[in-house]
Image (cartoon, rainbow, N blue to C red; front, side):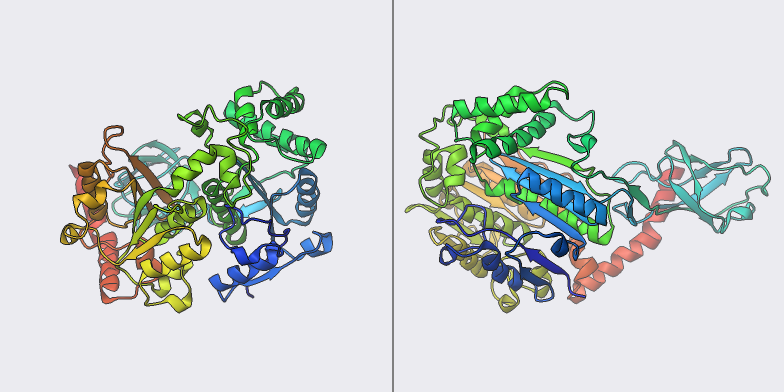
Length: 567
């Protein structure tokens, strides 16, 4: 059955928001759900996307497995949340205000995670098993990159054990970890003496999560032990709902009187719940009328990840509450002294950003000259954010994107600037056209070159000197290291980012201010991204690399582990 998604929202305002990259100037005045549905349907023809412009009635909500609310008043969150909790429907709230974001999950009281672990089950060769109560297993496994192989409470099975054959085929038994090479198991005193061989293997355990509905008293705040600033953000978001009910608006940007009103509301709500970080609440209030595309991208991505967990029951869901903030930006030079007049709305698409950083900052963004190297998954996200922020949207701004690759079918599940019709087209050209559709004011140029030693005649030092910054979205350590060297030599700021599976990193390098980037490790020569090898192998080289990895995992790595143990 096709996955069905429904959208319910309001009309596009008189200016396109800085957040809504699916909308265009021609959509002004139209219903946002209808306008967004057309763009979303293009992303994946196998997903049925419908627009719903009516009320969120119980009859309508009952047909879904997951419900996500955004930009929703507290009363609606409680009403819909209680209904979903009673019906066993997974419920998520995602919201952003200025430099802060909020995420809440309620997957019910008995949500079972079928596959909570990220990696594959681990195993190790057995060296010895003692007779006793408890029995002690000595194995030859070594710590992996994430720490020791086994953990207290893990369930394990045994196979190929000679001598103490009673363990072979036995039901999974829990272990207690003594050290990196020894595990305690159940009573083995009545078993035959261990002779040799065997494999101890971890068994994936299902995990049950218990969530409470948003209206329950003990779900009204993050659990004990959270940071004081996160408790302050929770109180600030709750107070903001009360402020909006009373005044039918959000606090005015940089208006001290409105900030104090919100603080009073937060104090009254927090009176019985412990101390309140008043500085956090004031900072939140001064920019709560703002909208920032990067903050929405972070919270939206986390919410989408929780939806996938709810549908697939893979990975442990969020423990109900998560708060994200970048309020430290308000302490930067030029941001701390902003006035209400400097942050007042101008009737432009950037009003949400002006509310946080002021009109002068927005003008400076338009003058920026930036180079984006790579138009893959991260490159698409960067270009979308840059377009919506108005980077290089001024008369002398310039945004250059370069990528020598072409769009492939395997790119379409994560590189959202491309469509099926773009397959075999140059990535940089298609991405630049998408940026122009999102924001026609951005002065974007597409190159189809690799940035490396072979193209130094094209990208000379003068080219880097005139840039305000470089964003790296490359997938090899060598290419990223070369780009860093060029930026260091020309004193050009560099934003470097990368992903591997479910992990990612972002590093900023500003010459004379930060240390040079030092990647943790370099891959083998000729290595390919793991996602390509596992899910989208499309060349002979990919299949050869996959076979090589399989061979090493079966025959080389276990032998190396044994040798290391023996040494």
